Structures are given as structure tokens and as C-alpha cells.
Length: 189
Image (cartoon, rainbow, N blue to C red):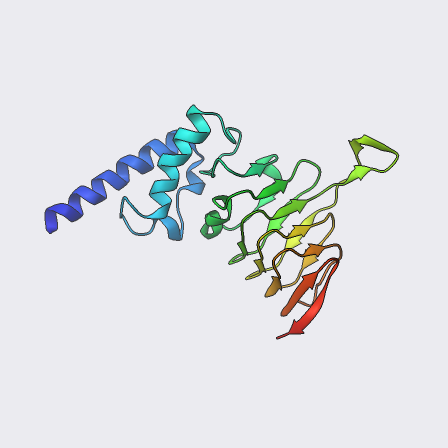
């Protein structure tokens, strides 16, 4: 039992060592790396990320381990708490951060196939994008599957976005459930 724990700790340190070669060290910490269990999510993400990002080239420009089935714009425009690294492993999620910043509050969960959009196409010239607007998600929000958040949207803390919703305006008050197209408040908490 003791020897198994030592071997797991050594393996975890080796994975982190290689992770620090390929990623910025500040992203190889937090709750996903607290337990030196080599089969926990954080360590799996490092190994998968090195393979998909660095060898196969999916999301190569991102300085943290990220899934290969999502699309992310410039990493410097995305701001999140390190404990929420899990949001970058959901399938089909699209972070359009090339035109403005995306701020993700601590403890927020983003489901599969969510689109966070910072700029729309210019209506006069569809081959160009209009001016970008920051998108801000409060702390402990939950963005349901297949939802889209449009440019300039701000959500207050504890906002739940129902699956398939299109969020076209801000809900700064938080503590609410919003759903629909366009999204509107269904319930307050």
C-alpha cells in the first residue's frame, strides 16, 4: 500500500514535469491536481493535451491543457479561475475570444456545445466582423447545453441558462433561471 502511494506520487510528479514543459506552470495547479492520483482528471488532461495539442495540433496556441473537440480564440482574451479548467474539456464548446474578452466567474460550469460570441458579422459586409464586446459570466453560473451567449452579455452570480437558450441581453441581478430565444427570466432564487 505504501509503495503504491509512492509510485503514484512519483508518476504524478513526472506528468507535472512534462506538463510544465508544454504548458504555463500556473495552469498545472488547482483542485484538479491536489490529489497525486495519476488517473485523476488533471493528470489525464495533461497527457491528452500534450498528445492532441502539441503533437496533433488541435488548439496548439492555448497555454493550458484543453480538449481537442472545442474551439478557442486567443487565450490571452479568456480569463478564468484555475479551478475551472474543466470548462475547457466539454465537447463542441466555442469560445470566440478574438474580438473581445471573455470573463468566466469562479465555479461557473459550461455545458457541451455552448457558444460564447464576442462579435457578430457586420450587416453591411458579412465577410467582416463588427466591433467586439466583452462577455462576462458571474460566479457559480451554469450555462446549459446548446446555449449561445451573444456579444456584450453579462450574467450576474448564480445565473442558470437553460439548455438551448439564446442570451441576447445582460441579466446583472443574477440568482435567476433564464431560458428561451431570446432568453428571459423564468424564475428567481
